[in-house]
Image (cartoon, rainbow, N blue to C red; front, top):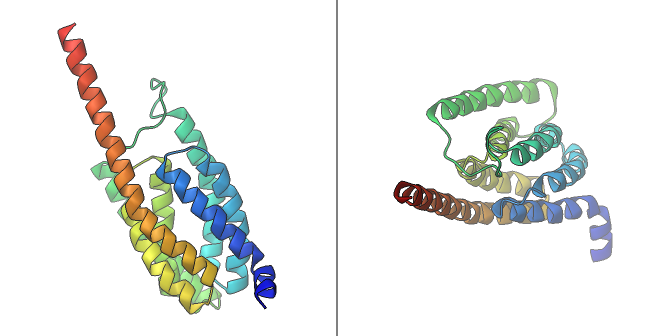
Length: 209
């Protein structure tokens, strides 16, 4: 029975494994998270279609696009004058307002679509996690540290949804995601502090030269 279960869930299990590796790379700020994200999203298009989580399935197509965008942006750096890689920063007030507005619009729009045109059993919660994940991934592509807050919420809510749908490998995946969201925030926070310390030291050195 174990072998049969593994065989019937091989796509979900593989997607869960690559998803965990993806978050590890995200925590360590390794650019290879983006191509791996493409692989993981491809697996979960199938998983979510079969389970009836249509918003989450649609989200995977967005992930395919944002993985290309994030890959480019992390390579490009903050601007054409920045020869280094993209640095971790805090989101500005304007970006925060845009993110909140985008979330609310997406949440309402996806909820209406799911409730009206699909057989989704939990259109409200499905819409909530989907809209939150869209905004969080865009913030990740720009290396805003606040994206970890969004993942903390989205991952926690998702655990309940996947228990309801009996997607147990994915439940384990999102339980790991939830823990790793806190770990990731702390790692990125240390990265920011180290960068600020380095910049301060450079400024002092230039001042006395």
